[in-house]
Image (cartoon, rainbow, N blue to C red):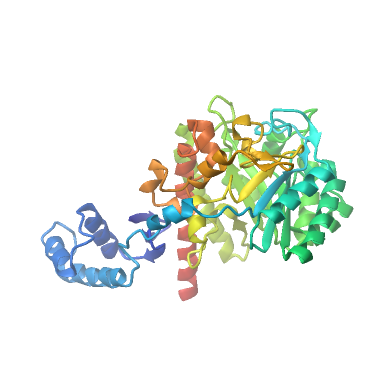
Length: 462
């Protein structure tokens, strides 16, 4: 499978199956396009030349011949027109042993903000306010260790609601996790997601010592942030959290953290919010599209897609401009590894929800991920019983890019790994579909990410 596009002055050819990326001139670009259009991928070089030389291409025979020589050299090197080597792994993938690698601990089903787009309904997850006890969290960590097989590195995200509303339990669970490492030959990496309201120097000192990553929730410009992330009384939270977040970023040497925002229909010009965060001094930035029922006034609509795609292009160009000025920052959704990348299983199924990754409620119930919490159809078990509803786990084990019709012929399938199962369920009623609007944005993000890599490589060559 071949994907071709032009972006920021680059002619880019992606060989989807191998992941090889080529920046080519106009002749090679057009010759490849003609070969694909006329199903000439399996032709010999001479046969392809005979067909193209007799066509109406605006190039002379010498140019076509030179382009074909370059193309077939790449083809022989398994970097162009390659076969799909992953599909044959599917059966083994479906039958793989289930090893749990990560837990999302819902430390608090409570929150001190009232974010308008919150899928957790102000932290309550469609239920009651609750704080996780140390005993429940302890059992969750014991479950993780017991079900992690030979895996050494384990991940635990302290999530909410707002986890700082149950901070003592967070600290106690970190200490307990550390006590498990040596006797069980494990290593925990803890992550904290916070809105920053309760953040103080004491918490930051502990987090900098124990948290491998900190996710800081902020939506960008003050008016946008305060509109979508107010306190329960309606007042904005921007002025309170920005200085705290800046302190976090600097105290962690601008690494191992993210400021993470959400854009909605109120800020379709979200590149301005990303740049605003960069101007505040943040180097690690993630701003993601809201996912909401189309009936919500802030929900993204299909008609917004052209503007959103243009906004990603605008952001990528601005990042290049800032790079030349020495003002680099990382945008999470443009980060891509063209050399190694994730393992085969990760390419096929993504985050591992329902199998390798589970969410745990304050009372110890297991769900496939935080976005399924509260939906009893996806209740998998409890910290006291373990996983009792194995049918859910088995269904998630079969969820991959080859089980989704929309993914099979998509060039981005090995980058998004089939997308979010929760989004598929919320929009289509099953986990084997795909969220269409999200797919369009994901494809553009992949294109921009590859273009940025090409631009930086060209700069190094110069």
